[in-house]
Length: 391
Image 1: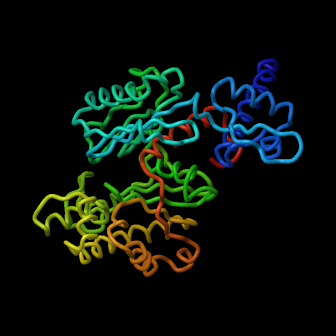
Image 2: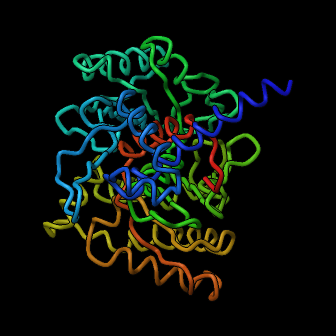
């Protein structure tokens, strides 16, 4: 028994060190061995071995940029771009977006495809697998994994989608497992708001924040929250479904089976439906943005109605979680100047003053494809070893 435990300690220590190296390079960018030794406090001989091993494994590579320091020139190491590839898949109500990216999270626009969302589970799996094979045919050997964002509840213990209000053919199914078996590659499914949080934390406005909330109003009304540096999941991974809080019992039917949920009143989709009904024609959010900017339609009253309910949701999040920042994801803020400031003013009237005083409300630059990529990158980094701190 003692012998097995003595053997386990060095292996665990190496995994912890590997994770620290990868997280450091992800956080600060290309580093020399000396930089990594200083930032992680891992000994120089151990760091040399770790870096050499990660280069052989294709996780790190030499950065061609010269090191501008005095004395003996060092070599910069970065997350692999040439030898490492991941894919991201965004499953939305109307579209499926599939992207290819390097291990530093850079998405290749030339290898991005958007297809209509199929209406059955088998057709969805066929679509994803076919497009991933086509996008990554030349780099199959370097494909490290695939991240998939899901609009619904995912049981974190089993990976099954237990409930997707707007894509019920996913209910009870495990799309990550189905795609993994077909492609022979590691696949992780992440609830879409958690994925957006990961993208904001790794690449965007939440970098360095340990307490923040992200509210996504692009299709449904979703929320993800980091508190004390940890993502709040709940017992089975279902936490954060504030969009299905009923605020108008006599309101419109919601995909969850209730009426008058925030999701039916405070989203891009709610605004689109209201504008389309008033204009007497089907419209998209992009068309509405174009028409408003061209001066052909004036949706002011309709926007204000959506903002009233959205402010209730944002103020509730601030009052409950006391975040440093609330990051907003949605297209309604592109319609005209001043939409976000008008929302903030409404939130200020509803939120508790002490909590609001210490909270910023910002737009996130993270998007769902980047969220899918961040999901698989986070999974690959986490699998190298447990975190000693919050994560």
